[in-house]
Image (tube, rainbow, N blue to C red):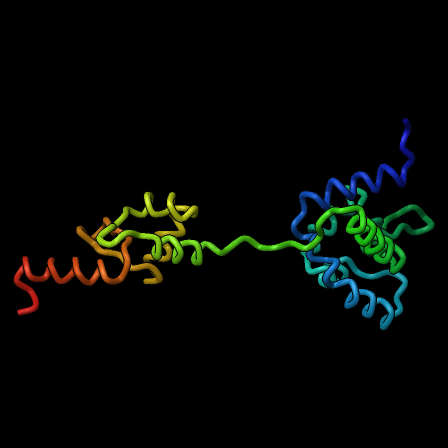
Length: 189
């Protein structure tokens, strides 16, 4: 069975929406975009303005135009002008709404931030447990760089058996180990 151009475009849009996190935020701004289009009558909208309305970067909008998801304004001479017509923007919004009706979930939900995952992992530590940053990162599901950054910002508690080898632990364990270290070395008297 042969698909016509509009079916091909719709198929491309559905594939695109299944992967794009940036496009999933646009339906929530639909009313705001429509209001802006109705309030300001223009023949051609600059790419940067439309990108700001969508909440994306102009380079991403250009990439979408290259993919054929959004059509750029074409002059009668055949040259493209860097912008979109109101009709093209409304068509794109309509296609997003149709894609939402076809069952694609267009609400993008951000994953839990890394610092929250680290705090949850600290709560899950057993009493007396202290982990190296790599072990803790594997348990929390974040990168080792994130753990080291949070240690440097003092967002995570750490016991330092040596100056450059921290062990991530809860605050009670940190205080207990630091007090033991002070007693051995003779500090704190």
